[in-house]
Amino acid sequence: GEDVEQSLFLSVREGDSSVINCTYTDSSSTYLYWYKQEPGAGLQLLTYIFSNMDMKQDQRLTVLLNKKDKHLSLRIADTQTGDSAIYFCAENGSPLVFGKGTRLSVIA
Amino acid sequence: DAGVIQSPRHEVTEMGQEVTLRCKPISGHDYLFWYRQTMMRGLELLIYFNNNVPIDDSGMPEDRFSAKMPNASFSTLKIQPSEPRDSAVYFCASSPKGVGNQPQHFGDGTRLSIL
Image (cartoon, rainbow over all chains, first blue to last red; front, side, top):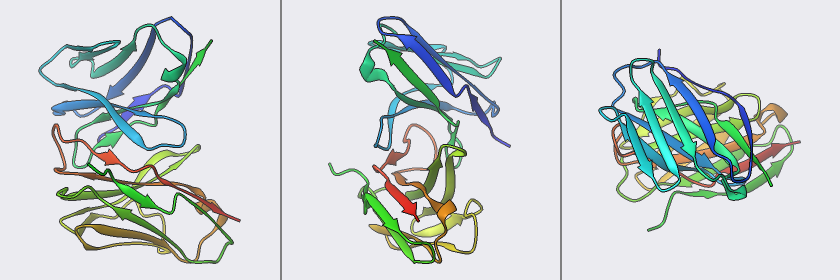
């Protein structure tokens, strides 16, 4: 069955880059997503990438997709304290399949 | 536009009581999802509906849990009787389609504490 794996924790210093990694199993996934969950709130869509793309950049965010290895990553440049949150990777299925989330802690 | 609206935001009750969580999806969305989030298990899909019809309830943990969607603008998740291990944050989400570039929109959740 479909499965999405992420590391659970990541800690970085303010101003450094953060890289959150994810692996998925369904090679037929046409879309892959990153959601962000801030404390006390629901998940919000951060960005997504279509499977025919290798990279997508949106301001401080860069998404890299390696279809051969079924590996997705989210890079946050110049990480700020406001980026502290849980980040979920998801692959499109019926319904979406979410990873367990990576808790990013930014140290000032 | 209004997002997914959940109520109550917080619920504290004693074990054995009936708990009802409510959700209003985004207007025009065909799919509605109920999730549970805990530190131990992360985000779990409990059940989802398409056009008010339950499609997959395999994630519902026990018969104590039930969900209904009487119309396109309202859904409930009920726990009867509640137990301390049901304490979690429960999220409702909706989407216009089940797959593709129309991902799910989440409410802010109901934080449930069973004493």
